[in-house]
Length: 201
Image 1 (spheres, helix red, strand yellow):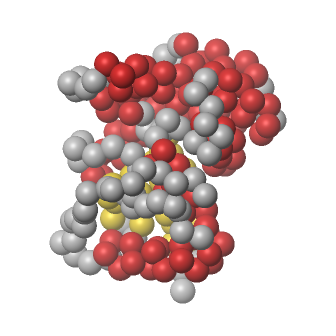
Image 2 (image 1 turned 90 degrees about the vertical axis):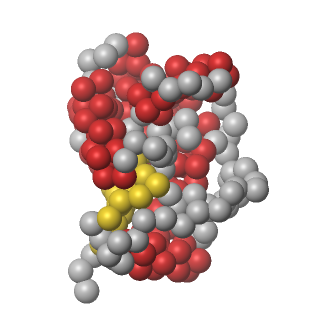
Image 3 (image 1 turned 180 degrees about the vertical axis):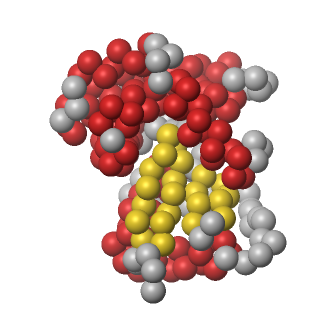
């Protein structure tokens, strides 16, 4: 049986992408699955949308970390995406760090990347690469979704949105279900209203 690839697009600011990413890494422990992480930008996604001032402020803060992640991938290879995302996301989400600049500074040091990558947070040097990755995700699912976006068995969709992230065989069973619907011709959507926020346990 061939190995599957689970592609996950993320923005470091999104708690739901964080939950999905932790699920994906659990899946890799219990199924023959390679997980690949790709940057996208909630800032880009919401740039021309009518959103609240508070959310606009978050979107503005969210851009610099994703620029830095994209620069790190471009300069140090795709394999750095997961450890850098994990280091940043651990600080922002379960760690509760609101200062994204501090989270990124500490994360770069943790994974052994040069601190001067931070300069790219304030430039558009790698915006074309970030836009290309972002556009790839939206080309697969349409532009009426956000993060997380995942692709498996040639099918991409928004989600899965789950809290807390399943662990062990529970994660594997959810993946089996995701793989089943992704492999079903004409399948588009399952959805219900969320009645709880992200649980980082």
